[in-house]
Image 1 (cartoon, rainbow over the protein chains, first blue to last red):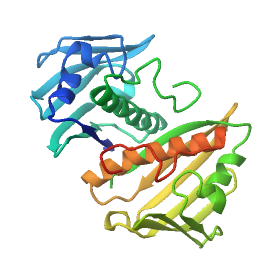
Image 2 (image 1 turned 90 degrees about the vertical axis):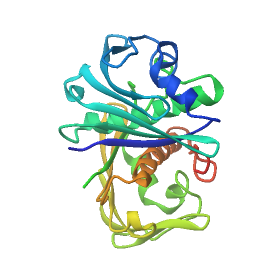
Image 3 (image 1 turned 180 degrees about the horizontal axis):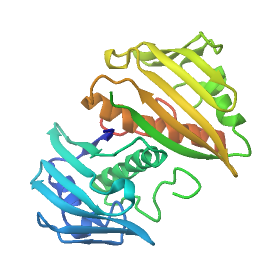
Length: 147
Length: 147
C-alpha cells in the first residue's frame, strides 16, 4: 500500500518542543487547525476540525521525545484506518521528524493532494517550534484554488 | 515500489504556462535551479545543478499541455532510473498538476526528504506561473539545516 513520506529538520536544542507540539492540546491547535480538541493520553482521541470536515485520530502509541502514532478513526473514506506516524531524532541542533501517513488503499488524486498539504503543515509545525507561529488552517499555505 | 506523489493547482487560463515551465530552458531554470541546461526535445537531456551535485534527466515523453515524463540518468544512487512524471489537466481557471516521482527502490530517509523538497519546488513552479517569480535554489524554501 502506498504511503505519504516527509522529513523536516527543526532547529531546537532538544526534541521536547516538537514532541509537545504533537502531544498537547494547545500546541496541537497551533500548527494544523485551531479547532482541535484533544484527549492526549494513549487510547484518547484528537478531533481536528476544518469548518465542516475533519479527522478524528486515536492515539495508538507515544514515546516521549521519540515517537507518536495515530490511527484515523473518523474522517474522509480514504483516510479511515490509515495511520499517521511521527518519528523524532535529535541531530546536533535539530530535531529530525520522519513522517509517514500509511495504509492508503490506492494512490488516488486525493492522496496526491494530501501529500502536498502534509508538507505545508509539517512546515507549519517547524515554524511553530522555531518561531512560535505556525501557518495553520484557515491561514495555511494554499496549494490550489480551494485548500 | 514506493512513489512520491503531489498535486498543486495553478491559477491560469490554460495549461500552456505550466507546460512551458516544464519544457523550455529559460522557464525550467526559473523554478528549481537557475543552473539548468536543457536540450528540450524528446530524447534530450536536462541537466539540473545545485552547486556540486545535481540530476540529469532524459526526456522520455512530452504531450503538449498534458504530460511530461523524465528518466533520471545521472545523479544520486537512489534517483538513478527513477522517473519523474507531470500530468496536467485544466479545471475552470486552474491547471492541475499531478506529480509522481516513481521507481524508488526503498522508502529511505532520503526519499522522505525528497518528498518534502518536491512539495516546496512544486509550490515554486506554481508561484512562477502565477506571479512570474519562483523560489528556486539556492533561495528555495529550506526544510532543514542544510536544504
